[in-house]
Length: 384
Ligand SMILES: Cc1cc2nc3c(=O)[nH]c(=O)nc-3n(C[C@H](O)[C@H](O)[C@H](O)COP(=O)(O)OP(=O)(O)OC[C@H]3O[C@@H](n4cnc5c(N)ncnc54)[C@H](O)[C@@H]3O)c2cc1C
Picture 1 (cartoon, rainbow, N blue to C red):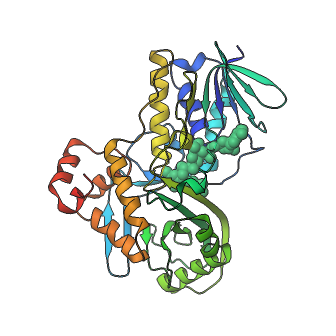
Picture 2: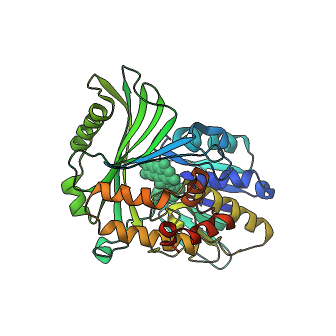
């Protein structure tokens, strides 16, 4: 056996799992992470409400106690001192994990290594990396999952594509209100596609502005979503919302299309020695596209289970309640026909919640008290 723990993919989940292992009783096990990339760069913004004290708390670089939702007619402002909205820059996350791995004698991160094939044998799993075969007692597969075949999904109301392009802009006047994160603003200058602007104000001069849209198919996405259009939308947002028409620079961009699917199109635990982690384990929440908190929580629980017994069952993913909510939200969104209708429905669902409760709701941490509040409230009861 070459290693005890072989982690495939050193992204959010893979590095997170390694850090959890290094902080546990398992720290003396031999671990290896195989990552395809040559080097780490800032490529993602990981935001979440601070409902769960995870291993990467020290790299939270910004937080907002206030967060708002705005349509053409309604505004909802919520606050949470207990669970503020938190921002992690992915590069800080990667570097923090690399620092801990470099200090350890047992865990190694091997970059520029693409996994080609995984074969379970009787007493180990062999992983083919082209130039070598590595044998491991356990494999944790955190490689980005392949997009499910669209022909199987198209037309299903539980399937949407979330497309976004975020630009970290720097303007030359102090226009941004750093006290408040804008979770959704649907004032989208004549857009037909369902979507909203997302804004994270880092300083009065700098913010991440991210137009986000939902599409039912790639062909629809191709027609309606392109860089030029998004740049134009950002310009219009600055002009409309802040009456700013001066110069601005874009210091960083992030773009992706996330599948929003309310079923897992692959096997989560394909063999007793092979565990999926991260998005590959279905932890990208279908109704929202958030995954960061679930990934951290899942990793911690997985390490706990591995410390207690050999070949444990994997931790559960989302609760049945959250699955029902996601299914409801996805179906509802699928049949909507205006961005304001979408944001109005979110405002309606959230307006009877406190900021604390909304944060817990978003990350699957509702207390018994929250659940009884749900049962009593008509707009929230829809989800039950
Ligand atoms: C731009 C962006 C912003 C996001 N923002 C948020 C947010 O604010 N909040 C939130 O909760 N979620 C967010 N998400 C969703 C989710 O948190 C991320 O997608 C997260 O990175 C998922 O973690 P992961 O470990 O599953 O995948 P990744 O972080 O993508 O890691 C997968 C790793 O596997 C490696 N890999 C792939 N194939 C191979 C191979 N064959 N061999 C070796 N290595 C391989 C990749 O290089 C990568 O490093 C965002 C996603 C994106 C894309």
